[in-house]
Length: 156
Image (cartoon, rainbow, N blue to C red):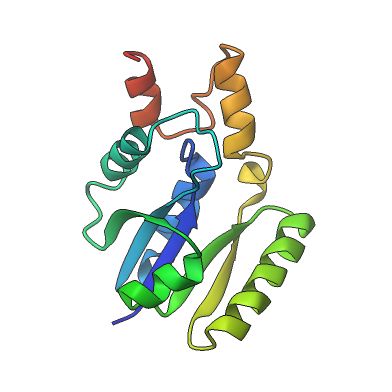
């Protein structure tokens, strides 16, 4: 079984993240969207809220699961038996960063391959960091996050 882990903080998940996952579905038997938990990091949204949103976005996709983990992503992959790490690339700087991490991961666990998916140009400027800034500034994020999040934020 081909299992991929798509790790991130997803604070919040963006339409760029959703695009990467949806385009990856034909490549894997299962994709686990894994929310990394870093106790040193301050999140805008709770782990529970982020998990709920992702489950809602992918509720009609039986091969998508949502999980959370602490520690190194490569160790999480080993623990759950995933052979692939899925990452999105928006820019040359993303590529350089992800290449470095992929090389380090490979040296720690050579059996886990990193798959890099290019974001389409229309999503290349969207990041969770920018979306958080728009939210904090009371701006409209409806063009950058899935509709399920926009609907949910209306009641938050």
